[in-house]
Every structure is written in C-alpha cells, then in structure tokens.
Image: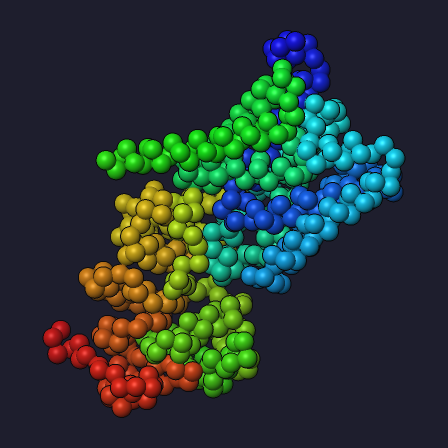
Length: 275
Length: 243
C-alpha cells in the first residue's frame, strides 16, 4: 500500500500525520528560544531525565504521559536552578541528572514484565501508535505554548537578548528564565511521542537553527522553523512508510538534511553576493 | 532638589577582594560627571552598584532619591561590553523598544505612544535610517548609538554610560560626546571613559576612581594627582590649548 492510499484509508496514518503537524507547531514556537538562548544542552538534559519520571509513573501505575509531563516540568525547574546557582560549571551536574534520570527509568521499567517494547518507543518514539488521546494532549500543549509565547513575547525576547538590561527594566528575569525552561519541558513531552527522547533535541534545535540563517526576527524564525519542522515531519513519515523504516529516525534525518541545506544555501547566496 | 546620586561609605567586595572602598559621592541633578581611572579601578563596578546590579558590602546608596532597586527604572544604562550576541535575530527598532519595558502602559504589546517615544529616540541619536537594520549589520559607532537610544527610550532622569567610545574612531567619539552634551540639558549624565582629554572637555566634574574615589572639577588635574591615581606617571594632554 502506498503513502497516498494510507493517507486516505488508514486512520493510524492520519493520526500520525496530525501528530507530526502538532509537533511542528511546538518545535517552531519554542525551538527559536532554545537556539538564541543557547540552552540546547539543558534541553537535552531535561529530555533524557524525563525517562526517569516515565519509569516512576509506570512503576506506581499511573499514566506514563502524565508522569512525563510532571517529570519534565520538575526537571526543568531543577536544571534551571542548577544553571543559575552554578553559572559556568553546571555541565557536570546536568550530565549527572541527564544520565541518572535515564538510568532510573531503565531500571524501573525493567521491573515491569513486558515493558521492554515500551522502553524502546519512549527512546525512539512511535508516531504510528499515537492515540486520539495523545493527539488531544498534544493539541492542548500547543495551545498552552502558543498562549504563553503570545502573552510574553516581548519579555522572553528581552530576557533572551540581554538579561542585565531586562533586569534594569524591572522584569523578573529569573522567573521568565524558569518559565522558558518549562515551555521547553512541555515541548519535549510533545515531541517524545514523535521522535523519542533521544532525538528530541534534533527537532527542538535544528528547524530553528535552519530558520535563523534566513530570518531577521524571532517571530520570523518561529514561522520558518514551524515550516521546516512540518516539512521534516510530513516528509519523514512519507519516506519511511513504504520501506517500513523507523519513522522517528527518518524524520530526524530529514531535519538534519534541511538544516544542512539551509546553511549551505545561505553560504552559497552570500558568496554569490560577495562576488 | 535632591541629588541624583548620593553615596556614603560604599564598599564593594567581589570574590574576596575589595574593589571599591569608602566611596562618598554626591551628584547633583543635571550634572555631567566624568568617571576616569585605570583598568580594574572599579569604574564599571561602581556604575553597576549604583544601579543595584552588584550588591554593596556596606554603605548607603540613594539613586534619584531612593534605593536603586526601586528607582533604577528611571535610569538609563549603556553597558560597556554589550551583554548580547551580535547575531541575535533582532532589528534596531526592536532593541530600542525593549527600553519601553517597565514604562509602557500595556501588558501585552507596545502602544502607539511607545512607538512614538522610540521614534524620537532614534531621531535624537540620528539612527532613524537604521531602524529596520538587523543588529548584526551595524558598525561599532552605530551600535553605540543604538544602545544610547535604548537607554533614552526608558525616558531616564539620569543616564550612565560605560566607555561609550571604546570601539569607535575619534570623529565618532566627538559626535558621541556632543550628543551627551545635548542630552545633559535634560538629564544627569555619568560617563565612564578612559579618554581623559575628552572627558575633561565635556564634563563639569571628573571623578577619578582607583578603588577609592577622588573628585576634581574639570580643569586642574595635576600630573602628581594622576600619577597617584594610576600608580604611574600619566601624560595629560591639555585639550583646551588647541580647542
């Protein structure tokens, strides 16, 4: 069965496509902040440590996605606190949280019979298994992200651009920094279903990084990053379907290719102008 | 009228070292104060302490009649090393607009009045033509004007400038000091500069800072006084003789 047939006839494929669209919106809204604020490493730490929370949730028998949601926000606050307190030397502590959280998840999930499959889908994502419930949660997360970004666009920009000046203007810089990390946490939960927590960082940073070389404003970056994410998600899904390749990984490969193309074309364009 | 700045017995310690000691300073409203001194003498630290960005170990600071944390939104600040990345996706107008934060009447967006203030600040600093330019495409002198415009957008009663002429050529330097002189007609100006000649030309009073503070009215700075402050002989160029 080819991609177009699947699109028309297969409910699971339609859901997967919708999941891709919802994920693109999240990474388009929040990715630019990750890139301009240079918090990719912090985001990676939060993403991996989320597995610990998922493990705890499964172990005590609550909804793993709820566990991921709570765990991601808690991790964002811890990582934020660490990065504020240990300015310049937070690397090792974040590495410890990163690996420790992940190991906790693996150990706890090993105690539950039959959950090895589930472990793999958290690590690498499984967009073809998204449920209607997952989609509702993803849409709700996009809504929250959209509202917060619209409400605090100026403040987030000021804090990302020049913290010291923002503080002088009376902004609660630390509070906004923590709020920003919480947005990153929500986006990670949004993306885990699609590409898994190991590859989340690709969707969180590369579409925005690709957008950054072609845009001059944060808002423009958000629009272009969303489009790049959309292309990667839809393209990856289509490419992976017929040869039955792991969808999340193909999406990431398309993202990497788009990023490389964006940077490469920019170089070529500037070089052509300079001649 | 209260002083714009009133500091008594200020001591600041950073990483176990006293970088400022027993500072007393009173700056009347409307003054143009130059702050000079050797590198590491604490000039930037003093400004940041006056703005409440660095905590004082002891002493009392009154900025515009109150503690800095409460009054600093009425001050403008032009930092020495821009704390931001030049490739940040932001235009000149957007940078200057951030000066309206804490002043604007709207919670969600910049109002028409905010845009009007920004337009006036762009005009005052003669960078209207650059408004749409991305920050990364500016020269050193242009960037300096953007930072001054951003500080002016706060509609400050006092403006602090930390080495505003560090990365600009002499002609631009002269223009910048002329701009500061114009601004001084409506606000108190405090300028940190390494360039004694320029500062003494424009400032009403020069304070020399090397961990401790010594104040002088502009002209008579003797070679001995300079040597004492800088710790080595300094050749002062008398700017007035060829002005």
